Length: 351
Image 1 (cartoon, helix red, strand yellow):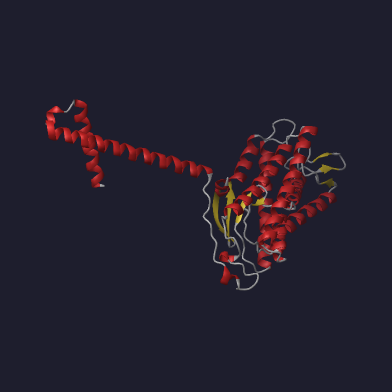
Image 2: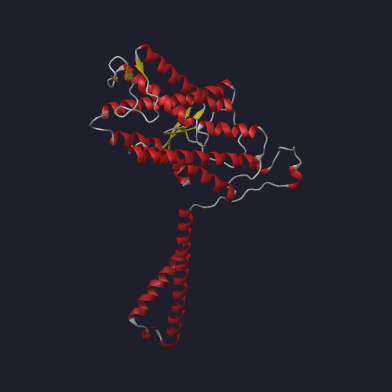
């Protein structure tokens, strides 16, 4: 599972931050276009247009983090863009991040959503506030006078989608679990209180399990009671959060990273830990696929070694037969074996 998180497209460095697009974002865009509704909803072109707005909203959200980092004179972090913002993997090390920088994306998304709602209200339209979207055109605003949705590809339609997508991104990143902004803010705040690494490691996974269970229940109820296909997305999101929590638990169990603070030492009490402890770095456990491939390689190597040993024993027997009875006593099969093995031994000695 950990290999999946490395699947990305590198776009280089933007404003001091390395930007990568995770494969999940590319798959989301492509699959949304392929399965865009043909009847009773938006067609291919409107779907393509709101997906462009969606990517722009993601860029604005991450730009909020970069702007907050510049304001706080902090080092800008690398951007690992996935469908819900910046994909941050769990770690069992003490988190030392600036909560103001982490809240930058939330502020930008919230301000854009509120601003869009105000402008739409000025033109007598109402922005969609349901995070699951409308029944027909999810992000299209409602026109108050006609009591209908704004026509696709009109200015109000674009503004409605822009506001709703910012609102959706804001709500999702308010979930107190990784990889969302509020989950990172929670961990950074707990870490800054100085409760210790064990407390940090307990609160983070507990919050993740709670959020995953909450979303799972909502998704199942929405699927069973309302038969809404969007419930599958909620269930998938709950499973993804649970997978991250379990990945973090495996990291801590295997000691994938440093057990204590920086370079394996806990400096919370000064430098006294240097006198009684040393850096504890445990080797990273191989994935299931890598262990299976390594076992296959070892078994193949053992079979070859056993084959070579058997050929050498039979070669000794044939040479002994030639010594006592001459080469003419060999059968055709033994002569072919002698030529084949002798040639293989010569090649092996040359290499």
